Length: 159
Image 1 (tube, rainbow, N blue to C red):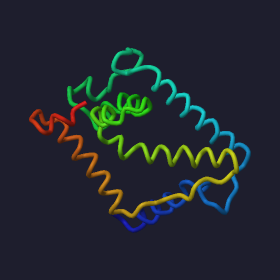
Image 2: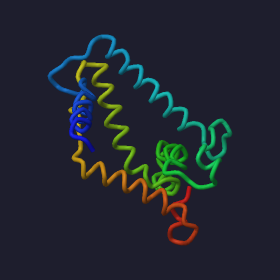
Image 3: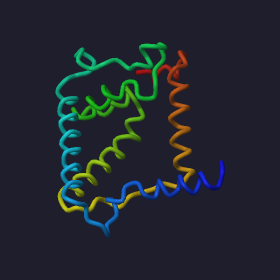
């Protein structure tokens, strides 16, 4: 990777989430957009909580699974969140164990957006070290492959 590209990439990453800084206050437009995003997220959560993706046909199928027959890392995530929002943690983990990684991230982003909308400042932005990012990418890729192996114990990970 060229040094110039790496420098530009680092600058663009540093520019992400400026409103998560505690020293800046967001404009009225940004605050309204943040509250709108929280509203859409909550509406989506209410929708997923009340309509079971396992029994309702209103949810689209996974395009990757429909084309290949293999489960992607996100397959079962809607069903998993439905179970989680209804308080059934073990069923949520049965559909997609990666919900353990995504739920804290979604909660952090949602709370930060809510704080941006209410007080103009979000939670501190967290930029993880490269090793952590590589770990999560590797974990997702390994999960993708392993959940498609049709042998026990790997088949337990299938949605």
